Amino acid sequence: MGHDKQLSGLIGPDESTRILGALQRGASRRDVLAMLTAGGMQAVLAGSIAGIATSAQAQAQTQTPRKGGRIKVAGAASGASDTLDPAKQANHTDYIRGFMFYNGLTSLDGNLRPQPSLAEEFTTKDAKTWVFKLRRGVTFHDGKPLTPQDVVFSLMRHKNPATASRAKVLADQIEDVTASGPNEVTIRLVSPNADLPVILGTYHFHIVKDGTTDFSAGIGTGPYKVKEFKPGVRSIAVRNENYWKPGRPYLDEIEYVGISDEPARVNALLTGELDLIVQVNPRSIDRVNASGKHAIFETKGVSYTNLIMKRDGGPGSNPDFVQGMKLLFNREQMLKSIQLGRGMVANDQPIGPANPFHFKGLKQRPYDPDKAKWHLQKANLGSAAIPMVASAAATSSVEMALVLQHAARQSGLNLEVRNMPADGYWSQHWAKHPISFGNVNTRPTADLALTLFFKSDAPWNEAGWKNEKFDQLLVAARGETDQAKRAQMYADMQVMIHNEGGIGIPMFLSSLDGHNKKLKGLSPIPLGGLMGSSFAEHVWLEA
Figure (cartoon, rainbow, N blue to C red):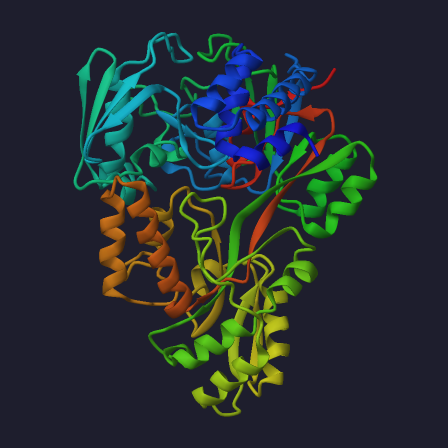
C-alpha cells in the first residue's frame, strides 16, 4: 500500500491532501507535527503520521513531472457540432477541449470541492451575495489581461435566451454580476445557494473574453492554445507559455480525436497510435493489461444505470410492485458478473459515495427474493407479460434486465425484456415506458442531482415521482450554510427516494481509461473519465 493511501486511511483524504500540500510547499516534519498536535492529536500518533507523510512526499518527489512531449488522445464522440463555446458544449469531447483552453473562477478537486482558480478567493455572508477576488497577472492567449468585465460577460451570457446556453437553467438563479472593484466581481443570486462555487467550477462556466462572438479560436486563459480545430475531425493544442500556474502545463502538444467504436479505440491504444483513451469496456481490461506497456485507470462511481418504474401510471403506481422490484436486485452479484467488479454496490439513492453529502447511514437494501415475492403477490399484477425496455445506450442495462427477469420469474412475475437499438434510445424510449432503464452521470453537487432528476417539476423526473415535502427540503437545503444541518436535509431526501422513489439503482459504475504506462499524473475526479475531462494540465510523459 502506498504511503499516501496509508496516510489518507489514518487521517482522511482532506487532511492528508492538506498536509502533503504543505510538505510540497516546503514545510518540515516539525511543521507537520505542529499542524497535527494543534488539532488535538496525541504526540505519539502525530509523530508516526508525520513520518508517513514525510516519506509519502519523498516517494512522490522521485517522480518529478517532466516537461515536453506530445500525446494523442481519443474520446468516444465527435461530430460536426463540436464546439469551443463553453455555453454550447454538450459532451466529454467538448468539455475536454474546454479544460485545455479555458479556466473557471473555481475548479473541482477529487472530493468535488471547489478550489480557487481564476478567483483566488470567494466569500459570502448569506449564500446569496458572493464576492470573488480575481487573480492578478492572468492573461488571455492573445495577451489581453483578465478583467472583471470578462467575468461579467462570461456568466451573464448564459441568461440570454439568444445564447441558447445548455447551462441556462443553472444561470437563471443568478440575479446579476457586477464589477465591484478593479480585481473583484460580486454575484447576486435570486435566492441563497451555498453551492455556487461548485457550479462555477463546471465546464459551462469557463471564462471567455468580454464580447466574444466567434469561439473557433478558443481564446481563453487555459493551459493550452488552439493550433488547429476541425469539428468532427480533430484538434491540436499547444502549450501556453504564459500560463498563470507556474511550471504548468507539462506537455508541448495534445492531439485529440473522437472514436465512437470501443474496440477501435482499444486497438489504436495497443498499436501505439494513441496514448490515452476514454471509456474502456470492462471486458477489454485483460487485453490492455496483457500488453505490458499499457494500464487501466479507474475512476469509481461516475455514473449509475437505473431501473425506472413510472409512479404515475402502470405497475409502478402500485408501491408493492416498486418495493418488490428493488428487493430483486442481487447487487453484489450484478457488480461482479456485469461490471466485472468495476464499480460500487448502490442502495437506490442517487448521491454516490464520492459526494460529501452521500448518506452513509442508510441501511443497505438486501437481495430478498422471499420478501420480494410477498410484495409482488400483494401487488396482484396477474400473469400477463410486463414489458421492460432496455438498450445498449444505457450502460449494462440489457444485462441488468436479463438478471431481473430471471429473478422475477422465481417470484411469479413475468417480465418481458425489450432490447431497443442504441440509436435514438434517449429521445424515443428513455422514461417513456412504464418500465425502462436510464443512465445518469454524476453531478458535482447533491442539489444538482436532486433538482434535475427528482424535484416534482424536474426536467428529467424519470419516474414521475412527486413529493411536496421533498421539494421544500430541497430548496431549504440549497440556502443552508450550516454544513451539519444541510447534511441532515440531504440525508432525509436520500431516505425518501430510497423508500418511495420509482428508481432502482443497484450499483455505481466506474469509468475506465486506458493509457500508455509512460503517461503519468492521472488522478480521479469522480465526474467522469480523464479526471472529469480536465486531464490536460496534469499529465506528463516519462522520459
